[in-house]
Image (tube, rainbow, N blue to C red; front, side, top):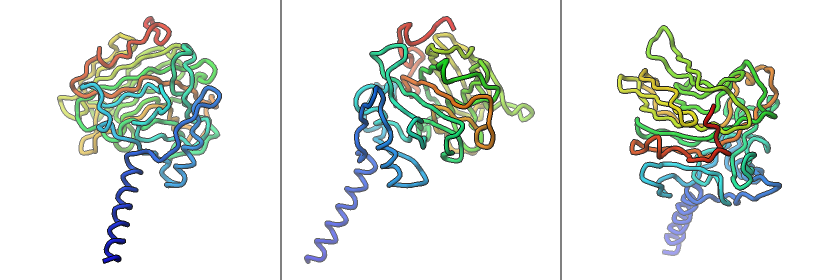
Length: 302
């Protein structure tokens, strides 16, 4: 009887231990240091779990109900940022910090930094926030604000991704920058022209650019891709935007520079700020996904 009791107790403890790892973050809370949130403690904990994955799993969006149309929202405010994010992909101390908004000292934002000398992570040169593991529905909304500092984002003729919807291989939808341009690259609807490139806005520095995306992820005739930049609709595209016979995409924001995987370019580092990262379902709309920022956060004239 005693032996059966002990075996049962061990089983219960094992189950509770896994539940804590998966749902109730065992990592120490972020601590404010010199106006930013350090990830050094977080990285140490990640290393103990797996020296390969560098993955941190947090509470799922379902465990923290949001407004009916919102599945995810991260404003980087409070003492526990990223508590609903899936995964932070960086392997350096400078790769990710929560800092004071350069344009508004009452607001917190995410600061990503990637250097040409950084180690590769997940087979690439990246500092990214893994927002959604796998999109569950075809019709989705996404939005965020992004800023490129003059000191930290020099023009480069080699492009980088700042947001990507990824299935396998090259992402079927990605937001990119090159030289002084922000553009969208999407899977094209003809085999002869695999990628369609759409210029969205000039890469103006030290101002906030707000993007809202409405996507029906599909390789068929029902595919839709709409993009607003600072209140102006820039894209209304009905061609395929999805690789058929592949899993639904996952979504990331941050910076990924493939050219640095095996060579160097004109720039040595990329610094980029993000705020108000949101994911909405089919009940969302353009108005509900906007951040409603004041002029200190976005430049509507861009």
